[in-house]
Image: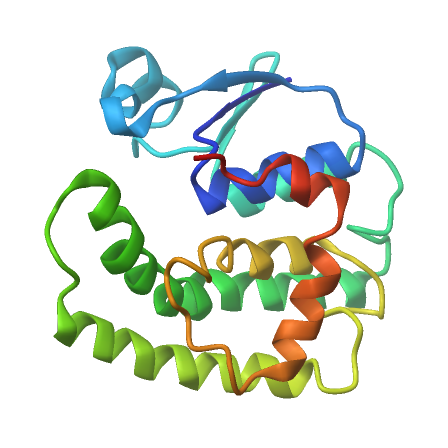
Amino acid sequence: MKLYYFPASPNSRKAHAVAIHLDLPLDLRLIDLQKGEQRTPEFMQLNPTGRTPVLQDGEFVLWESTAIMQYLASQGPNSLWPESVQSRADIMRWQSWQQAHWQRACQPLQFERVVKQVLQLGDPDPQVVEQATQQFHQEAAVLNQHLAERTYLVDETLTLADFSVASDLTYAGPGQFPLERYSHIQAWYARIEPLPAWQKTTPRG
């Protein structure tokens, strides 16, 4: 299987981390978003949206990180994507929440305080940061409460849900995410960080 990815991208990271955790061999193909390689005709043929990651398994091509994660975890029995219909629905609930709400709260802070600096796009926009911070608190409160008496998001074991939600905290430090009041999120993420799959996919530089 080939994974077309950009290592600095949280969406690429979560798909790559799942493959590493499950010991699935991948032929990694770097798509450098900073060089515009996602807009080449060759890549656009794989994914007409021009985004990473993209998984290619023979003639089968799959884009969207959550779908890729589920496909990878379906290659054999494992606890990341258990057979239980209810567990899978619960995992999907958190993956859907991550895409629809959590990501939207984290991405603006990441862009304003990290991406802008890397691409030399100027200073953070105070209004965007303020709005994103308010949304972050709204969503973080939900996640923190859910984790108050849980080790992981679903079934007290590591699942795809954890990789999905954790991916948006990749730049929590440099993005200055306001996590101070959310002790349960901090404790949960401290369990994710030491995982070999997470360490191996940490963006460098």
